Length: 124
Image 1: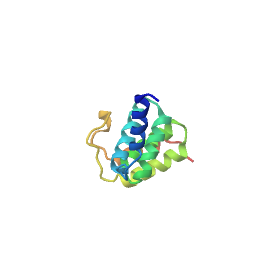
Image 2: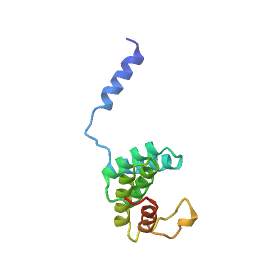
Image 3: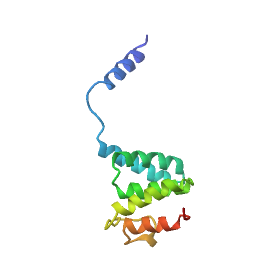
Image 4: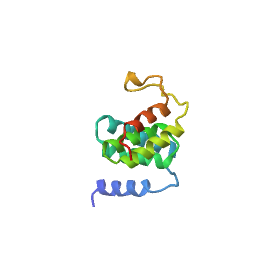
């Protein structure tokens, strides 16, 4: 066995050692960032995957819920979109994004944005 493989095997063994668990807040930020970037790239399946993972970590985050609704809506999963928008509206009362990707939405709360998105869905 070459020295490279021995060193690689030793590194892999060491990588599995320790009791360090990932910080949920950091995982949430990473999942949200990847999901949001996927949303901007119109990769709605990837966005839904990462944003739903973020929602599992923090089911009260209005930004995660709002963007998850957008991903589901674009995937045609309207019941899931409706549920995410309703939760975003509830959790996003008084929450104003520091910045928005479209100036049209500046100054609006997450609740208002979620309610607008809900209104854009077809009736049940």
